[in-house]
Image (tube, rainbow, N blue to C red; front, side, top):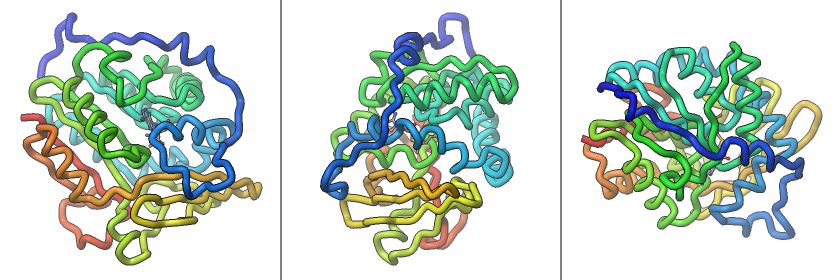
Amino acid sequence: MTQSANKRPHVDGYAESVSSIELEQQVFGENPTEVRDTDHYTQEYVGGMVDKWDELINWKKRTESEGRFFIDQLKSRGVQTVLDAATGTGFHSVRLVEEGFDTVSADGSPQMLAKAFQNGIDYGGHVLRVVNADWRWLNRDVHGEFDAIICLGNSFTHLFAEHDRRKALAEFYAMLSHDGVLIIDQRNYDAVLDNGSGSNRTYYYCGEQVSAVPDHVDDGLARYKYTFPDNSEYFLNMYPLRKNYLRGLMRDVGFQQIDTFGDFQETYAEADPDYFIHVAEKS
Ligand code: SAM
């Protein structure tokens, strides 16, 4: 893949994203298990949850457990431009910048983006190009074309309606170059739904002192509780995506070749991995 000057993506919206930050607490209301709404993530990645996120994922351990998996996937395809669509606090964006990728860092939570921007500075003096954008309207807020889009850390699971998933995937597809690649990961919800199993933290959430356990699981909701050493508790309400369902959606949107890895391995027994990683090629 080549990159020309006019192909270089450009970014709007950072000024607005950082200026709109207000400290808040998570809000789930009287019936937390009834909260099954795609927009609700903006009320979950706020305040203490943002502050605690890096404790939960532990950058050093996560770097060790991921190894070069994502970097190798991108480099082996000649990728130069990457959109980190679910930047969170910037773990992958910083890694990508350090590896020389021309990276744009998007997220729908201004608070997570502000933390990412600060982390970029703190971890190596990188000025991340951040943009506040919801996947459903990505093309409106992020301009240009990318060789790769990554959506990692079990982020896609925040979309509760099928039409939102299709819309987000269509937006990703449209922003990729003709031979671009989309990488999405997800928790192994098949194991959680079918066997009540599904351990956690082994690969992604590596903070040793943090517990992440299912609080409620049914076909339409996986609500996880995160407890930190100071006994603070936070929750995330997510949609329990089944692996083959998501693969089917990617195929419907137009991705031609989809390889699914289990905990970074090509071969695995279906129930074993904590996480699946889908690598979807456009052509
Ligand atoms: N990728 C990061 C990581 O692995 O540490 C963050 C993962 S965090 C589980 C999910 C992120 O996705 C949050 O920062 C959240 O704001 C973002 N997100 C969820 N739904 C979104 C949407 N519809 N549009 C844009 N960002 C979204």
